[in-house]
Image (cartoon, rainbow, N blue to C red; front, side, top):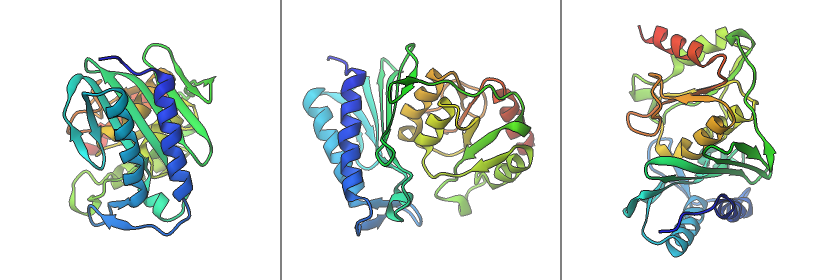
Length: 261
C-alpha cells in the first residue's frame, strides 16, 4: 500500500475545513453521545468526506475516527481522524475548532495535520522533518519556570463522575503559573505548544484522535510530549498527555505526581 504525502493530507484537511466553515453560524442538528458530549451533522459530513477520500485513494487503510469508530484494515497504515475537534465550541458559534488528521506507519506517527479553518491556520508535521504553520517553521518556547509559563488544559466529558476530573490540577497550576486556559480543542492546544504560544499542555482523559496529529506537531516543534507518567506513548489507553517546552516538562510531571499523593 502506498503511503500518503504530507501535502495530500493537508489537502484533505483543507477540504474538510471548507465543510466546517460553510456550516459555521448555521442552525445545527445536535445529537448527544453523552450528557455534554455533542455531535452535529457537520461532524458527520466532514468525517464522511474524509473516509470516502481515504478509502478511495488508500484502500485497505486502518482508520480510527471519532464518529464512526474503527474501520479495520492494514494496521501498518493507520489514520487517526477527528473531523471536528471542538464540537461544543462549534455548536455555540465559538470560532475555536479544527480538523485533525494523523497518519501512522508501522505503529509510528509519521504525518500530522491540524487545520483551523476560521483562521486559515494549517499546522503540519512530518516525523524527523519539523513542524510548520502555513509553511513557517515552528519552535516551542524557551520557558524554564512555571511561574513565567502560560498553560492550557481540558476536562473530560464525565467530569462529575470520575476521579480524573482535572479540576484540582487546574487550580494548582493556576496558582503556579501565569495562567491556565481552556480552549476546548485538544488538537489546537497541542499545536499551540509546538508553536510556542502556550508553554505547556496537559490533559488526563482523551481519545487518540484528539492528539495524534497535534502531538506530532508539538514534538516536531521541539516539545517534550509524554503521558502523565513520563512514557512516550500518549495514544494508548488509559490515555493522557503532557506536551511542554523542554525547560518545564519535568516540572509539570512533578506537580501532577505531587497532586496525586
